Length: 94
Image 1 (tube, rainbow, N blue to C red):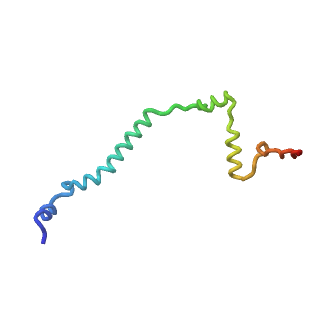
Image 2: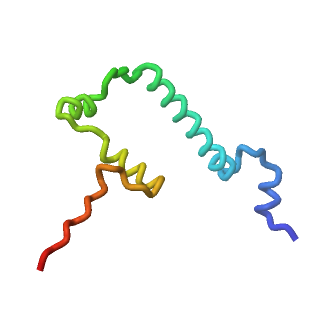
Image 3: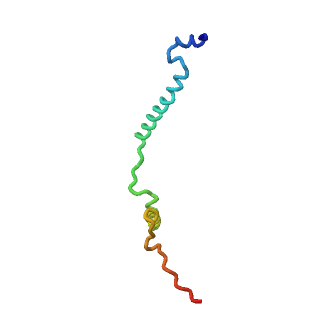
């Protein structure tokens, strides 16, 4: 047996139901936000830098990436670089 409310709702068009608008609102908001982001990206492009300020400052100070490269190579191969191998200690005389 159907109650009066379900019979009344069956005859209504789809746009009269709030759940439909809740389901459609999420993707619609995402599409609008995407167009807004596209507009911002097109109207305000980032400047192209030839040298990043951090690396230019490091070059002036003489800082290189050698320790990081040695660590990466050691992690990949398991071999120590020649400069990192410590010489054998001389025997201690008692």
